[in-house]
Image 1 (tube, rainbow, N blue to C red):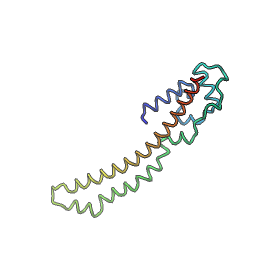
Image 2 (cartoon, rainbow, N blue to C red):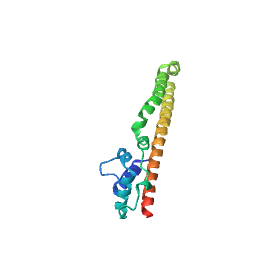
Image 3 (tube, rainbow, N blue to C red):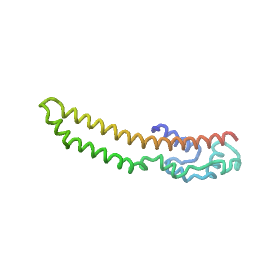
Image 4 (tube, rainbow, N blue to C red):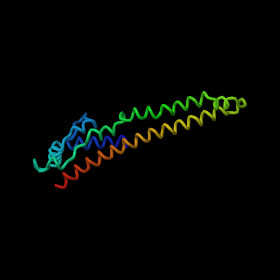
Amino acid sequence: MNGDAQSDLLRQLQDLNLLDFGQGYSDLSGISGSDIAKRLEQAFGIGEGILKPGMFSGIGADLVKQMMPSTYSPFTEAATQPILGNLVKSFTGKPAKIAAGGLAGSGGFEQYKKSATDVYGRDVGTVIGQTKAQESSAFDKIQEIVNQWKTTAQSI
């Protein structure tokens, strides 16, 4: 999921009169099947009352929440704390002292630091990748729901 895809989805929702300018994804869970039916009738020029509320499932608050980065902040913090602790230990523990005690100018400690920070970066990247994958999955589900709404309305 990238910023362009998010902007495109918001624009689609605004074009369908499902969100007003300035509203965001957090407002999606407040849209009922009745609202969706009425607004899609307007957007596609379908006669009033043709589309029924039961034809459109809303977007649940849980799904919207799964798309928000703030949902994953506690997980990210909890998962990266031990990784950071390991990095600190690697710079202050016995292996660091051994690496620093090599011949002057040998670059042993610099290589050791680079290796430790590479491991830290990889592990933090894995955590962030996991949360981004979950956000992206929720976004894809929302996009799929909106596409279903449009397909239903266009088929009338």
